[in-house]
Image (tube, rainbow, N blue to C red; front, side, top):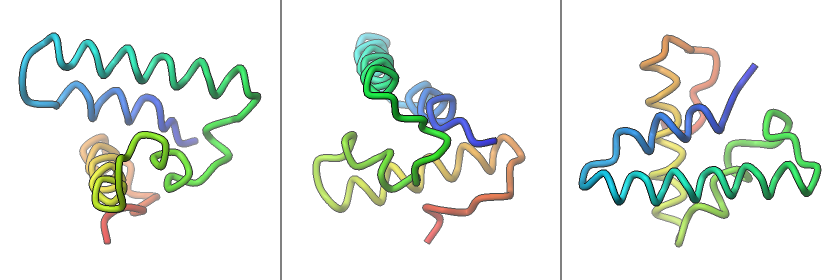
Length: 86
């Protein structure tokens, strides 16, 4: 079963820069997760594209987020979903 939030936290942990920047983004991820729970949305049942749209500022960053999530899955050894590699 896919866990997009675990993948997203793994992507954020690899952000270059200060710990402050990483902590800020991790807080945003936590808030996004709470918002989805409040709305009754199960992240395991939505597409990766729908998951990253609120995170991205434009089309180029949507592709970047999708690619990064794919790379994290591949690094974890999960080769079942290649969405984002394109």
